[in-house]
Length: 153
Image (cartoon, rainbow, N blue to C red; front, side, top):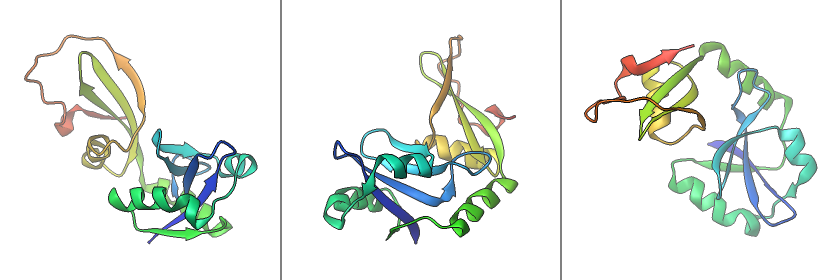
C-alpha cells in the first residue's frame, strides 16, 4: 500500500502527496503526482498551506490514474513524523546519478537511485525531471540506455 494524501488547490487541481516517499536528498520533500505535470517533488507544508483536503469524489479520478500506473494508493488525511522519518531514512542508501538520453541533443536527468540500473529504470519509466540539455553530436546507433553511460555524482 502506498500512503497518499489528496489535496485540492483553489483552482480545482488535485495533488497526490506520498509522504513516505522522498524526493530530495534530505528527505524534506516528498514525491507528488498531478494529472498535469505528473511526478514531482513537493514541500508538504507549503502544499498544505495552499490547499485543502480533497473529498473522495474530488480525488477519485486521480486515484484511478495512480492505480493504472502501478501505485496501490491508501488515502490518508495527514502526514506524521513517522512518515518524515521514513523519507529521510530512504536516502542513506541512495546515490545521485546523471542519465544521458539521446534526442537531437542529450537530455540529462538527475536521479536518486540505489544503483545505475535503477537510475536507468527510473528514467525509462519517466519517473524523473529533466535537469539539463547538452548540444553534442552522437552516432544515431548510440544506445545510451547502457549502464556505463550513467554517471554517479
